[in-house]
Length: 467
Image 1 (tube, rainbow, N blue to C red):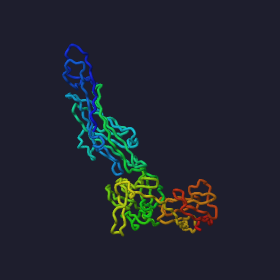
Image 2 (cartoon, rainbow, N blue to C red):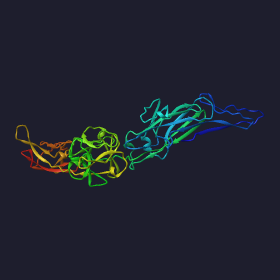
Image 3 (cartoon, rainbow, N blue to C red):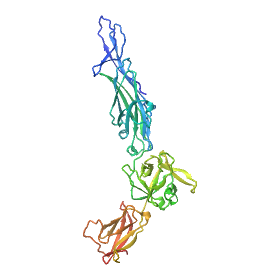
Image 4 (tube, helix red, strand yellow):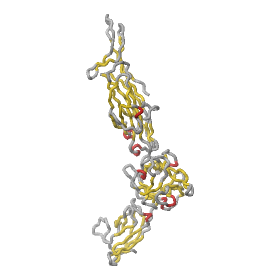
């Protein structure tokens, strides 16, 4: 708690033969009203001490303040209070203007100062400044970096309390490569009477912990997700099950229930995690915001329970944070009914190795099957269809080699086949180009232009055909 700071002055009186009795020291305010702050009796003297005004703060300082706070992925709001007291040594009952300004100590994180929203309201009581309180009275909002001053009045001996709430709406805004940034917010109360002022200041501490930047990840690739504590163990959907099946860890293998696509990122990097063996399902935390909920796969919903940030702790190493709960996934209890497999739960992010994962990109190899299409009831082959396994569903670009690779079609995001138009390659920049050669080499590219499948296509009687 900061000590009261006093602003005082002195009034020197010429020595005369008169006996002076100083009743009060008057300070002229901007309204033209004279305020009496100090009184004393004085005998014949050359100096009379003038009165003073003073102000104090409480409830904000580090060590005592509920606003001294560490922001973490799951909790990024704190409500506290600050009390301002007019400690001027006077019996005057005239209200004195007071202003309250917020800021932060130079050298702290400018990013954190700008991204922590601060709301101040009141006057009220400290007891009413709870985490669920709805701001009322005079409400002022800003950030530690930019906050308009609150103004009020206090008579001598009077104290008033304001609630203060510091919060962050989006965790990725306050992320850092080290996981921690900090600053020291300040509050300054200024009491003003005419040309006389008194100030009091206090500081507290706020920082972040275990909040890392979101890393860009391919939205079309498939990945195995390894534990950093044991690279031979991978995240797995138990027994290749469907909706309601748990996320577990298991010895790494090549089956699609250990392959996941991280796609659909929103503006803040929250992804949907799709298991390859059940592509209509997504990782889901069950809608819980409390630690201890097991992660399962459920029907795609687009809700926060299915949103995940892959926060990069170090190069290629991630912690996985749920959008709605702000909790990290980590191994938890043994599923005793299922061969003693270890399930994954959402828990408080704590920086431990059990919450660290690496991604292994799974190479796609399309097993392309060619089928000829008859137009109408005629037996004339004009188009062909390439199809592939449902486990490899996705968007692919198909190209034919005619002395240079030309695009002949693009499949949809969840497609398992594509029809190749026998009249002309779709989207080809050379409008007069058409099928001419007896045989063409064909390739399929993924979104990162990796070749994931090859085939050949033939031209028979000016119609496409499978070899």
